[in-house]
Structure formats: structure tokens, C-alpha cells
Length: 174
Image 1: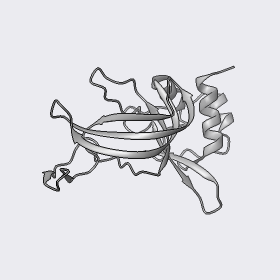
Image 2: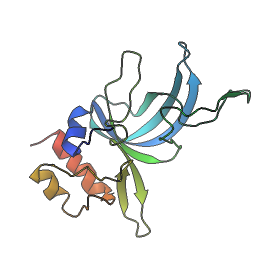
Image 3: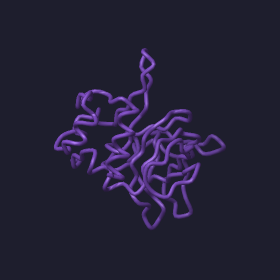
Image 4: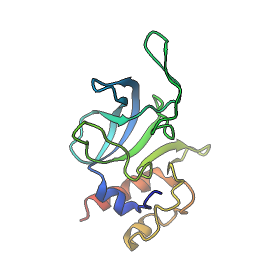
């Protein structure tokens, strides 16, 4: 079971928040023989935390069910903790990330609630949606968040510009 988190809770629990474009994905076993996925993002907009122009996040597990070694040998065909995620170079996302663990691992806050894919509609409008279809994002949110996202339907993508502006207000209220 996943604890439902609204926008304020996602923002409070995240150590780093940024808009990024996936640059590369590498899946390998680390020196402790732990399956790891390293995803490097070009940071397009720094929202919260100490961020560089490129951020590499390290997640436990592989995002693919079939993993091959560099020489093409089969390593694994088993589902992994990241099987629900997919990372593709060139995609853009808004990420809310936990603090790195002592082993250097992190993940999106709320098991995917803190990972918003950015899509462009046929109309040209950019929108965001998380792994849960934004279903619980606005529930029990403050009136200021609801007012800022007045055009948002809780079950549909949210306009990218208004979403980022609202997150910035939540992170740095004035």
C-alpha cells in the first residue's frame, strides 16, 4: 500500500525538486553486487535543493525485466523493484526526490507520486502527470494550492507552467 501524498506533502518530503531531461540510463551491478539503475538528467529548472546542471540519480533495481551484460549475456529475467518505472533518454520530467541513502540510492517521493512526466498535447500545451494519474495530488491540499491550480481536474494532466509555478510557491512561500 502506498501512502497518498498531496502536492505540499510531496514538496516537504523531497530533498531535491527539478525539471529535467533524461540524458542517459545505465543498469549494472555495483561493487556490492546490488542491481542499480543510474539515470542522468540535464537540469532544466532548479526548484529545490542543491542541484548541478546535470544530476545523476541512483535507484535500487533494474527498470527492465530482462537485463543483459555488456557482452550480451543474459543476467536476469526477474521482475525488479523498478519494473514499474521506465526511463528513456530525451523524455522530460518534474522530479521530487528523497535524500540519498547512505549507499547513494534515492527514489521519487511516494513511490512514483513524485515523478511527473511532461507531455505535449496536440494543441501544443505542455502538461504533467504522475504514475498515479494525479488522482490524489490535490486531495486535502491547501486553498492556496487549489486556487493556483484552479483549472486542474484531479484525475487529468495539469498544465506544466501552472504546476511548476505552484510547486515553486509551495517550496518558497512569500
